[in-house]
Image (tube, rainbow, N blue to C red; front, top):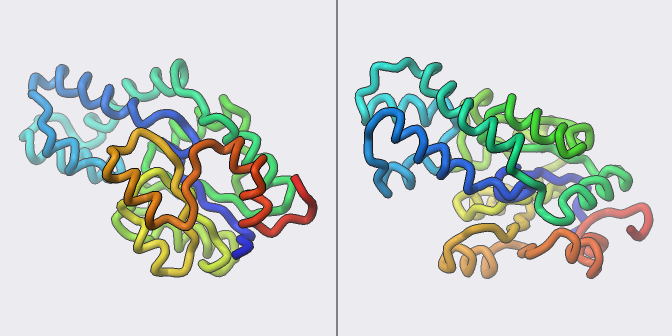
Length: 227
C-alpha cells in the first residue's frame, strides 16, 4: 500500500517522553500524600487530561477542582518537556521528508495542547503538521479510532490512504478495522506488548533513520522522488 497521509502520535512515538508521565504521577502523589498503585497507573494510561483529572479527583476524593489538578500535572510536565525530552532519532528527518514529498501529516495526541505546541516548536517540527488533534479538546481517547478518523477527515483523505504511527497496542485493531495502516514505533513497551505489536502491526519501526534509509519509506508511501 502506498499511503498519502500520516497520523503521528507524539509521546513515545516522535518523542522519547513516556517516562515523563511516570515522573508526573510520582510527584503528584507526593503532593497529595497518597501512594500510587499499579491499578491507578493502568486505569489512566490512555486518558486525556480532563478525563484523567475527573477520575483522579473521584477515587482520591480530592478537594482540588478538575482544573487545579490538571494545572498541577501541567506544571510538573512542562518543565520536564522543555528541559529533558528529546526527539526520537530520525523523527525530524522523516517528518521533513514527508513534508517535502507532499504527504499530509497530522498529530493525534492525548498530551496537553500547550505542551505539545511548545515542545514541537522547540524541536523545529511544529510547522510540518497540517492539523493537530488533541484528545482532551475532542473529548475522545485512544480506546477508539475516532481521533484518527477525524484526522483523515480534516486532511481530506480516505482512511485507507492513512498510516498511523503509534507506540501503543490499544488502538491497533480498531485503526486497522477502519482501513488505516498501523506503524508501530519501538519504545518502552513490555516484551509482551512489543511482541504483539511486531506480530500485528503493518510494520514495526525500531529507528526512523533505518525506516528512511533501508527503503521502507519509499516502499510504503507515495513519493514524487526517491528520498
